[in-house]
Image (cartoon, rainbow, N blue to C red; front, side):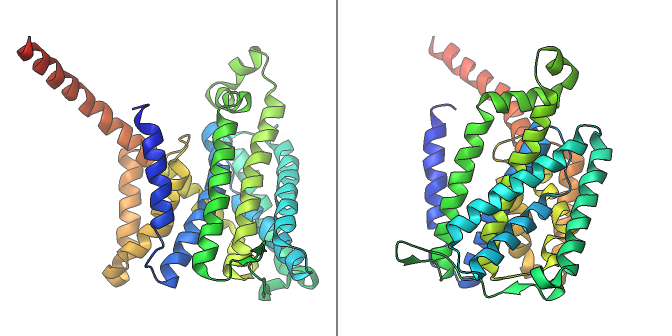
Length: 324
């Protein structure tokens, strides 16, 4: 399997490059949404799947990134600088939100992050002079780099794809660094990890901050993609949507958030031919998956592969015996 991984990696990138070719604007726009939600879900997966900290505020960090990017780009600042500042601000706010996480765990922590998401929504809605209130902000231009514009949906898709690949590589590096191993130890057994010298407080804060920064990047991409943002786009329902992406895809698996985002974003579009029944079918499929495979789609795939592996090995041994 190790030898196949580079080949599968190259084929996956090739599929992403070819995916929007020949498609209409709506399909390309939907693919862009999948890419940016995958980035946000990757950050939540780090916090939840690897560090074991429940967060219901990932949409709030997307809102922080989207509003900061929108305000700065509307003021004439280039998107690149605005995105860096958005990521840094999300990291800083995530670091501050991580402090309450040091004293609470599990569902209590979920309530803390839920309250933060609600608080941010109220601030965005009521501070009309800055955020535009319920009317939101509009007119954000899509960025240009070295004279190359991303005004069209196709161009913006490839720009989003580059950001997605950079974010995925960064996450891959983090998970294979000492930080990543520390996050896994924190999830599996915090007491044992602390007894081995791991600084629980610092790792919890880092998990929140890094995961929040990924949400900030996703928000920085959402602002020019939609070119209109309002508080409802970052309400609690969207944090629950991101949580669903991580759980459905496979919490604690690297490709889980990407697969989960594809299910949550793309599957309803595939089922639209059923007209008014597509949401019912979609909901039933998700419920069945959660009942029979709590570890998500990737966990289900691994279970199937493990069941088929003994049969394959037995067949191979039988063939070798016949040859002898």
